[in-house]
Image 1 (cartoon, rainbow, N blue to C red):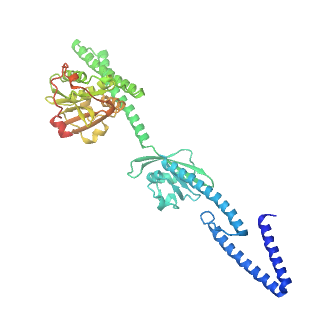
Image 2: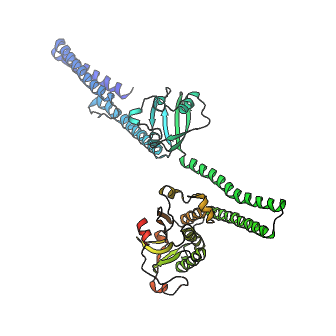
Image 3: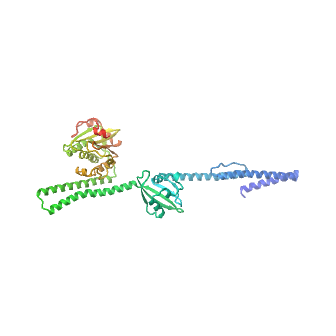
Length: 460
């Protein structure tokens, strides 16, 4: 017999014993009256406690558990222990649910849940952005009423989800490419996963452009050489013409060799996972070498100058930096008309070592600047070939600077010239003692306080 039955029987026996005592002392009527009053009081007490219990059962987890004496105290005590376990379990479930939602919200992919009628049950913030939805407003809406793109409706209704659907012109600004994968689960429910593949698509487009550009760049000199060889083979030519043809073929061979060498240099930079060292770079000697190369390439057609702060030093891979900075200087010479000015500048900017090349050349339109470091990208293809460029120089610059965590900043104005600034990170910028830089370096004139040339200040 459990506690509740035992206590109930004890109460009834006590009532019977009390009524029997009254019966023996006062007779049957008082005894019956006492028994009726006691039973009625007990009934009302039970009804009162049942009403309290009913209110508790309406909200057993979050309601307050009352207290009482006797039998009902035991009932409430046991209910309190049960509710306490429920509250613990509910809290654990809520915490797990919160962590699950936080994990899905942290995902870079969109997640959207559909019921068996293809109505939205829930979606994360990324899915809202991809599809242009509003979770509060669009819950319980049929998804095909909100996303009416024919390819999506067809993908959803045909029930063949082995391959993802690629949707273009998506997102807030209609510039994103989204891959959509639907995964059926449960009772005809669906989980919609979205992934932004815009960068992947852009990379693939760049790869296709790269292959096409390489083919085009190599095809042109090969076509020229083939034509010359066929001419020499099939037609009688004078010694003078033969030499001229050979010189032209040699020039095209050198051009192809330059393209291949630049491609190999890019491949080495991309495949080298090791960061460049932190050795001190002899920057003044490097600038002197760059000035000598610029003057040799210019052949007296330009004014070449340098403005150097002798306290500026840097750390990195000397060979890589020489290649990158040399590309910037040679570009300035190649694209500056005769009589123009090329100025190299080494200075401090907000604690960062900065190497800048300013020219008074033709300038670059603003729409071309973001794409300058793409492989084989040319603002003017015919002009680039005339200057002897391979179209890979700035791509090499980009990779070298990326390895050094440096930044290339370009400002330009058509007809006024350009400024290419290399800003080195703080960890690679070194302040040198002026005394150590006072010794003369061949090719570099007296050190001056670094000031940007007129066009550099204007472009900046």
